[in-house]
Structures are given as structure tokens and as C-alpha cells.
Length: 222
Image (tube, rainbow, N blue to C red; front, side, top):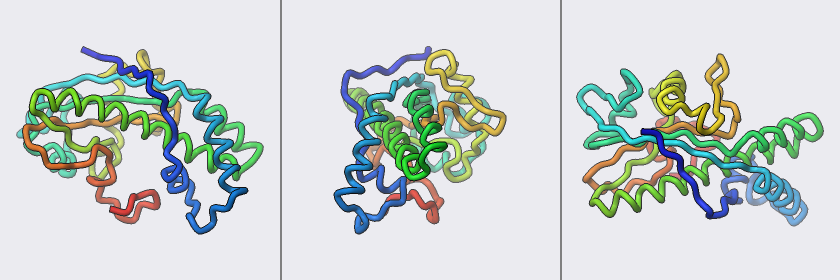
């Protein structure tokens, strides 16, 4: 069964994440830069229309199977080791965020960079809220979540985007579609899987902790 996640909590873009995604160094942030970023941040926060659909399937560790077809990924198997079930979800910040980014891409490259960063921070914040909500529910049953893991992390091939979108019927429920090159539209969208285990390994719920791309320019300092 496919479920929709809704929340009345206001989603804002974490300003530190905005600076990280945009490549702006803290030493270069003056009042003028801060005002510039906050203006764009506020515009995208007002424009965002968050949607998320998900399902929960049993996990067969031996076959690395959880309802999206045959999966081959050493990194994902490591992430899900010891799990009994897996959440699969697709989330988006909506098409209006893309329209603003596209408009700025034509009018102002500097604004486009910040808008891209704000959009990324917004959809990640939306995913965080969902994961935190699910973590609370699972904890009531003595279960714990693993970090969410998206196609493109490690050797979890980007082609699995299609499997997740199809399994969730995500186009119907969120409006997210895929291009021929497997890019999501709206671009500020995320697909991911998230394991459920009896073991509390104290992991964070986001993805950098499990990704092996140490040279990624957006990687958090872990």
C-alpha cells in the first residue's frame, strides 16, 4: 500500500546547508551577502509545495530484496544489514521551486546558485522531517531506522530511480517524473530507501554518513 506523508510543520532551508550547497565560505559572509541569501531563501520557502509518498516492505537480506526488483549493491547491503523491513519513499519540494531556479538561471547566475542551494536544503529538510516522524513511530515498537540511502550513493546504481518511482507510482502521488537520463523533475526531489532494525546503531538519518564518495564537494564534515 502507498501512503502519503503530510505535515503542518513549516519547512525552512537550513542556512548552513544553503551555504554548504552553494559553496559560500563562512569567512566570506558579510551582511550584504547574508541579506541576499535570505531574500532568495524566503522566496523559495513560500513557493515550495512539499509532497511525499512511501511504502514499507519486508526485507530479504540474502537476496537484497525489498520490493523494487533485484538489487545489486554492496554499499546498500552494508547499510541494510540486520534489517527486517525497508521504507521506500519519493519526496519533492515542488515545481514552483524549479520555475524560480530556471528564471534566475536566465536573469542572474549568482541568484541561480543560491536558489539551487536553497532548493536542495528544502527538500532535504522535508526528508528529514519524514524520517524523524517515522523514527518516532518505529521506536514505539522497539525498532530503529538506518540512514536513508538514495540511488547514486556508493554502488547503488542511479538506474534504481526508475524502480522506486514505478513501485510507488510516484508520478501520480507527487508529480515526480524521470527524464531519459534518469534525472528527476522537479529537480529538487529525492528517492531513497531506509531500513528498519531491532538494533540501535545510533546512525544519523541522512545519507553522507553512508556514502563512500569522500571527494564530493557537498559532503559534510563527518
